[in-house]
Each structure stands twice: as structure tokens, then as C-alpha cells.
Amino acid sequence: MKMTLTIFGVVLLGIVCGYYLIPDIKYLDLMINITLTIVIFFVGIGIGKNKHIFKDIKKAGMKILILPIGTIIGSLLGGLLVGFILHRSLSLSLAIASGLGWYSISSGLLLPVGGAEVATIGFLANVFREMIAFLIIPIVAKRVSPYSAISVAGATSMDTTLPLISKATNDEYALISFIHGALLSLAVPILVQFFANI
Image (cartoon, rainbow, N blue to C red; front, side, top):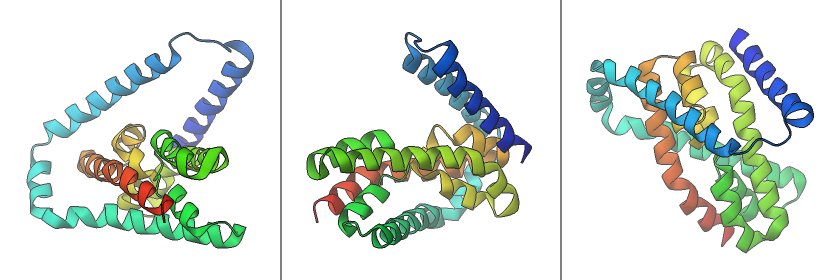
């Protein structure tokens, strides 16, 4: 809970600073990418130091695919449910849900087939998924399970939310999180294109 409140406070402070104090920072995207890359590098060092993790992953074998498949199924069911509730096209609802938190690629893929409105909805839905993940990962990891915390993150479990998952769980789950995110990132373009073109 403390970690979630800290994250929420820092994000809120960033929003206030960006809006009122520092509205124009040159090279902001570059600075974010460099910082994120450094953090992920240190998470990788933590994983690499625990050599037994790789043996455990090897033992798990095909079971390592269960979590990404479960995340995809859950996300698609959520997309269907929202499509029904809002009386939207089910194929486009599934395409939006197929972004799995990767807002930049999904909105770009949705634009040619669904237009600006669908691309914007896809962008916002996946941005909100990532923001909500930042807030609830520590709580879910502690009160539900580390696997559920990884699933909440979707495709971002290999990059932006990986440091948070690593901190909320341990190095073993951080490696699972990375694999989970990598597999989902491969699936996103395929799933978005498939559902958008039905």
C-alpha cells in the first residue's frame, strides 16, 4: 500500500510540475527512455545474479506460456464485456483490448481500420491500463498473487512496469514478468490486426 501511495504521489507531483512549473522540457522522451533503460538494466543484473532462476524457468517449460495466454484471454473477455455494455462493435472492442497495454503500437494499427475515434479510444484504454497497473501492482502482488500482478501489467511487464513488479515480488517473478511481456508484445500486432479486420 505504501508503494502504491508513493507511486500515485510521484505521478501526481509530475502532473502538477508538468502543467504549472515545467511545461516544456526539451528531450523529455529521450530522458524517460534513458532512465527506463538504466532501471531495466539493473533489474537484469538482479535477475542474472540469481543463476538458479534460469534452471527453475527451464523446469517450468511450456507452463511459462500459461500466464500470457491467461492474460490475453482475460483482456479479450474484458473487451467483449465493455463492447456489450457500451453497445460498440465487438470486433473493434476486441481489437482495442488486444493492445494489452501497449498504447503506441495499438493506436497506430487501429487508425487505418477504425479511424481517429477508435485509435484514440485504443490509445486511452491502453494508457489507462498502464497507469492503473502502476497503482495496483504492489497491492495485487501482496494480496492476490505475483502472477496476477504480472498479468495486470500486460505487455508493459517487460519494460515500464518491470521495475515495479521486481520490487513488489522478487527476481524470479521479474524474469517471468519479462518473458510474459515479451510474448505479449509479439502477440499485440497480430491480435489487433486480426480483430480490427474481422
